[in-house]
Length: 622
Image 1: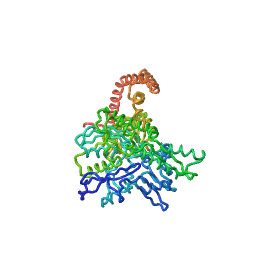
Image 2: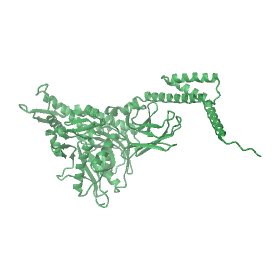
Image 3: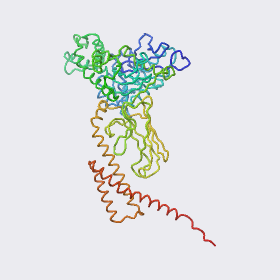
């Protein structure tokens, strides 16, 4: 909406970043950033807790990271939806504060003097400061917002972001992928059409999205990325350089206090920024030694260190282009987003790799917020000539008998998305079904990541295969999943808004799609074997049920022949020979088809006879 539309509710766009956060709104002259009283737009995404239990957010909190590292929380976005093992493996060496496991789950919590905070609560404090800044700039209350997240945020992280907004008193009208928001900001200004690659390298995450823009419709064709690769990782490489220099001046068994580590971390960030403008950067570190430690880093050494990380982002770019079915030469525009894209080597390698002049006209730290404000304007009835169509990053589905993964919504499907499939039971008289929801690209659930589980209860006892269970997956415009199951004969229903117990394992995320291609043949063979075993089990169960029917007129020879076939079928189902098991299933199915038809006929005849016997005798005629 525009500010002129005073009668309508104000909806702002918020970029909730790893390093900085900010807000924007669409005014009469187009989108604009909302500034603080001191004129600054960027609010450091840092929260520091004071001795009285209160907290401060922003630049003042950032300065306290050196003097009060255990009470100052930064980079909390990297903890959203994460379990404690992932945090210990990837984040603990860069955090001055303590992260512990939640009492009732594997999720990470921030420990401040014995009081535990969720990452959502810390993020809510940051969002609250952004909200206050917006309200002061506009002179009006703000209750609704469009909030951006990395395109590769999974369902847990998107849910965590929505929860953070709720805690901050904000209604998140839409969760928008950061690269898509950036494309909106450029597209509104330039009215370009064609294929656009958005390269988004922020403080804590990397994303690349391939969009096709046609007549105001922004359709995301594919996305890829790594939610644990960003400017923070570049900083840590500089920290390693600094620590090597420091260790030459201290005893080998000496430990560096948390306060000094936070000073080194902040200094590393400053050195990184200096190296974007000069060939060398110098630093003086005071560790209470006889004299300060002098450290100098060249741009060449820095570029050598970060080159593997940049190469990883380029690999993601090509993965996204492949998924979108687009060759690099077909790309029309390349948009650079995120503060880390200011690094000269990043721009040089991306331009060389994609062969296009880069768009860097808009401030990379502000472009996402500007795009979010445009989406906010669309949702509140302002801009009407733009449509945003995003995608989900990984396939969604359920576990079926034998551990197979049945995909209902495939990756890169446009959201909102809906898919429905029919399933049944595999055991006689089953009165409940557990629905296990998974995310991934492999054919077996053991190679995918579980999102959640729930039970459909109250199903009337029926023979296996008779219940008709309809499972529906609904992914809303925010990329958040709701799963519903319904047994059609009894009309019992159950559903879940999937809130995973922990986040994706990042090693799996990085390799998940690559492995799905590499292991495609083995996966399909494994799934084929699972499905054939299920088929063999169903054939055997049905045949044994028929053999037990007293009304079936089997001879001893027929019974012996079927028992021999069943033993052979059971033996093959326990083995690994797919071809022989398929042949046996086909042959046995044909052999028992007539038997099944006869069994149905005999069962009907027996039932009619039983019903006939219940009828009263006709009275004799006088």
